[in-house]
Amino acid sequence: MATATAALRMPVELAARYDRLAKATGRTKTFYMNEALTESIDRLEYEYGIMKKVEDWRAGILETVTLDELEESLGLED
View: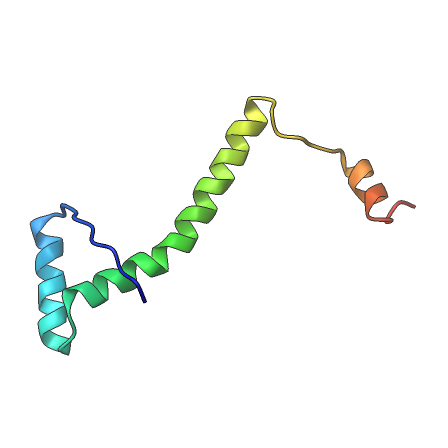
């Protein structure tokens, strides 16, 4: 897997927690930071995607349909 380098600033206590975890398990801090980033990216993309849709709706630029129109397009009308 190709990798990229990124620098970040974090609270000293958080860095110390990563240090302790790495020492206790024999893994690297980088391993655990990658685990944390990987686990959070899906949630962040989802949440910010929803917020963007809400902003678009409020601005009147999100295309919407009524429930009747949706049911009709799905062949669910009575």
